[in-house]
Image (tube, rainbow, N blue to C red; front, top):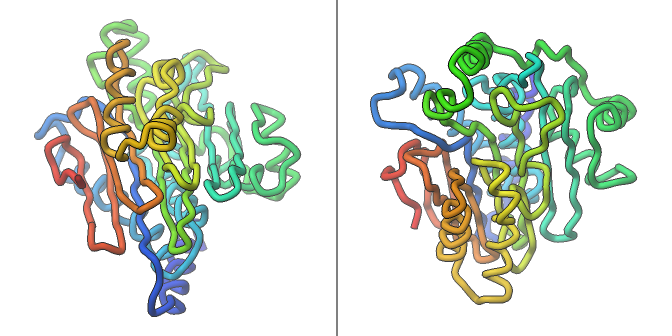
Length: 332
């Protein structure tokens, strides 16, 4: 049985045992942001993207509805997104300039502030599973390259050849970049395919998980915002959980995820206002992208500076959406 089927079966089993009553829950996820004009996607491609987002959302929502933890929910959602070739994480990740795949991921538990982050992963099938295992059992919170792979092997996580993550579509993108140059590639397909999820569970705990292949043609060894706590991933009970996608270097420089939580904790701002302000600061320096966030009350924000962001959300209050374009189904 594949990883996707196992997750869906586990989620359905949890639904069967769901408590009759409980506190509010919420989940939001993204599959990347970028230049996504209406009509730019073939109908079948758009439908495949929407279905993949819905499957991931539903798997996470089933965990939460059954009283499961926010960590379980975000990892369930991101694991499915890693297996979907439409996104730049796991299978379907972009190539480095050397023609290889290097993966980053992070998981954070807002209840305990426990964190697991990995970068430069090349053979572990599920980077988000590795990040979670490191968070729960590792001697450190951040491992890179061979150190991360060695920990994965010691923990019995599935290992695959680097070619497992490669697709012809992503290889063509690398070839285009090589032939056209960096500037042309920026405008040809400016899409940041990082995937991520945030959640609030029935107990009021928050969690965030993010996974990515990085940027097309990136230098081997490059580290973006995804595995860096406070930049692309963060979860703090009493404040918010954030998973970001976009110009990694700018998200790092402006500390987007941390800034949002600080604005809520110390400035008393609402989630939507805090998220928009942090993105605006990043954009003012020349960056672009988006994020998904949930606060301690279960409110969802999904702002972006781009024309689109693959995203989905569900809450116990009745919110249920799958969207691509910026003007489509705003949750707030």
